[in-house]
Amino acid sequence: MSAVCMMASRKHGTLYIGVTSDLLLRVSQHREGAPDGFTKRLV
Image (cartoon, rainbow, N blue to C red; front, side):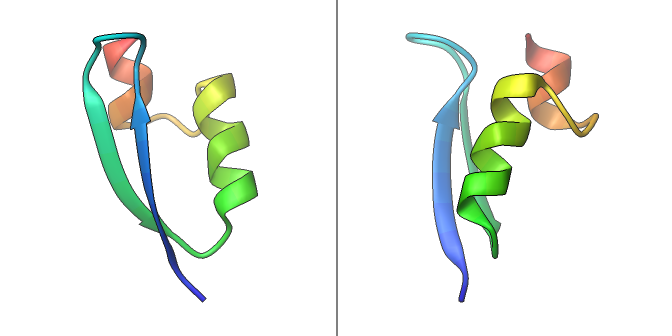
């Protein structure tokens, strides 16, 4: 099953919208700044 995730770099920051099959893993990766990619470059 896929999930759409919407995350922000910070309050009033850049909004990231993506699709993932493992939402809990993706949220964890976003908070830790891994993997290298779009959200890591913005912080």
